[in-house]
Length: 269
Ligand SMILES: [Zn+2]
Image 1: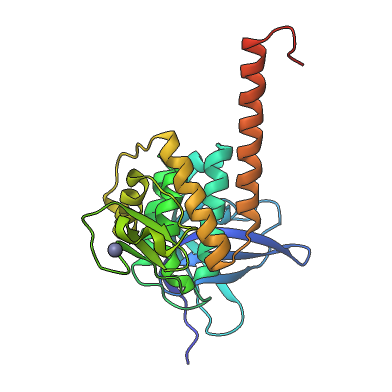
Image 2: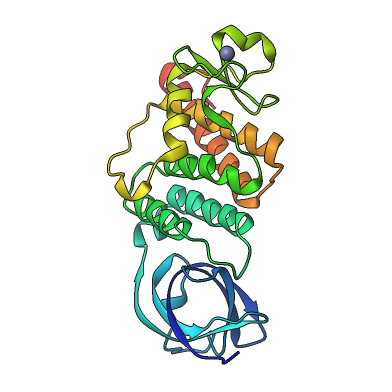
């Protein structure tokens, strides 16, 4: 097959040192999914594509998309940096986790169809300051299918009813209606609001989303449910996810210590 350079859309996922002056850059591409690129001289001072290959930069690149071995970029046509993600620790943590999840969910070098646009829409919403947890929860629900877990969100898996309160059962692989809650004593005990969101998320096109406004208590339950499903049913343990957990525990410790100092001067540390 002829080796020709071609334009493609992509977003920089991560980069890794390679030899003294070069970098390996993983790019999520529209044409071949996640793909590793060799970028010669990328660590030299004044490298002309330095800004184009920073993490969370996206745009149109030109290069060789190799069937086997490393791919190359020869130029960047028009790129933009997601500065909103770059400057905010929380957005950064969720966007990093999302890309790590996507890297696991899709085979290197294989086109990912409409998924590319959906991932880009998710990143752009996070970049624009929409609630990153909720955006990532939407993607987590949808990506379950890629990991071979295809929960039935819309109706009871036993009787098919969708008009009664539902709850999620991991062992049953989907929702149970209130008449069949006894099928699983370990069902997740989700509120009706949370099950409604999970149903919505399963088919939500993020390109059409503008506002995101989910109450804190609902967000906590969504997170608990999806973390549990990913732990138990998918079995993924990602470093970026652990970081989000750590970040959450710092935040709650910080909030607790603030509350103590406001309510109880004598005993505060
Ligand atoms: Zn039922």
